[in-house]
Length: 202
Image 1 (tube, rainbow, N blue to C red):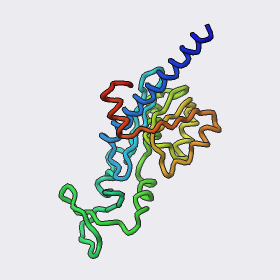
Image 2 (image 1 turned 30 degrees about the vertical axis):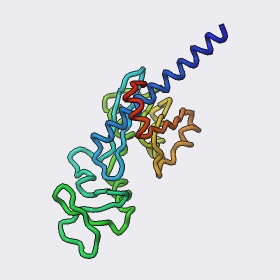
Image 3 (image 1 turned 90 degrees about the horizontal axis):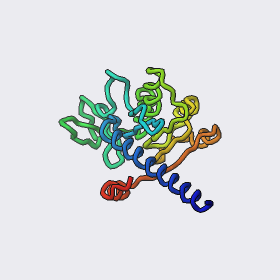
Image 4 (image 1 turned 180 degrees about the vertical axis):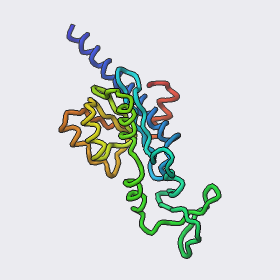
């Protein structure tokens, strides 16, 4: 009986890990296809009772100028669109527009803080607009939440947060754990994506 119960417990854990992988892959796909941030493509998928109840993508509010219309990031270097030619500055032609290397490589981060909504906030905002509760749900996020997003997730009474990539400004992990949220880091490498997809071991 003990061994039977142990086996069932192992199967339950394996099943949860497989679902975690599935939803992280889905979040990654949504971010890659729909984010218009030049620096990072981020998505948050909130799942409750094995069903997705909200999807949030990082970006500017509706009807505002998108980040990738202003900035371009190539090989880790940040460029900015300009109508006038900027002399003595490295430039890149992209989709018929000239982008010039930013003198301050932190410029985008400052612009983003003022103009872009993080994926977690967008996902929670949609739930709030529909008067839908995130209590006891799981948030699957491509990148670890920042401090402000972590506070919002705590306030929403979410039970679990699963993320695949560390975010350099994602300093809210300890805060969430101290608040009783189960935080799981599940890295997904490109090789892992291909192996899982082709083996259909999700």
